[in-house]
Image 1 (tube, rainbow, N blue to C red):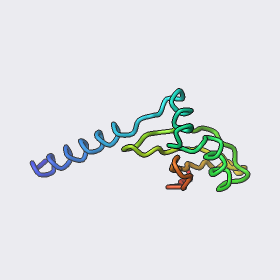
Image 2: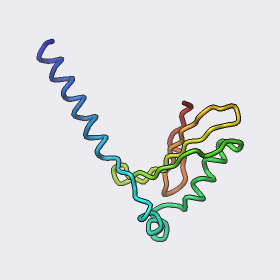
Image 3: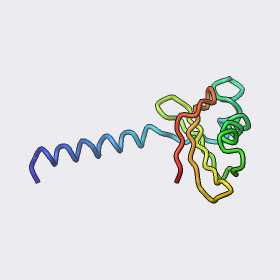
Image 4: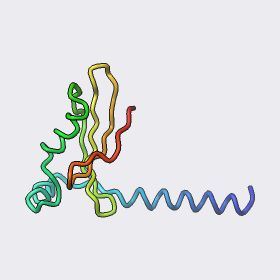
Length: 102
């Protein structure tokens, strides 16, 4: 392998590890204060955003993460046909940032 390829691979791996470190799970004990401060919307409101996108689905998992100072609510759903969906929602305003079918 050439030095250039080795350097490129090392740089990509380094960036991947840095970005992984920048997404931190928010402990449940902090969520109430974030809602009270108006930093994020209530989890009930954010769940409703997800259910509005997939009305007949069931929420199977949720997680609140702090990504570079932005709170992202991640919701996993399963629809009646058995398809799994992952939604990323901006926890401060309820905007759906991304949606992916597994």
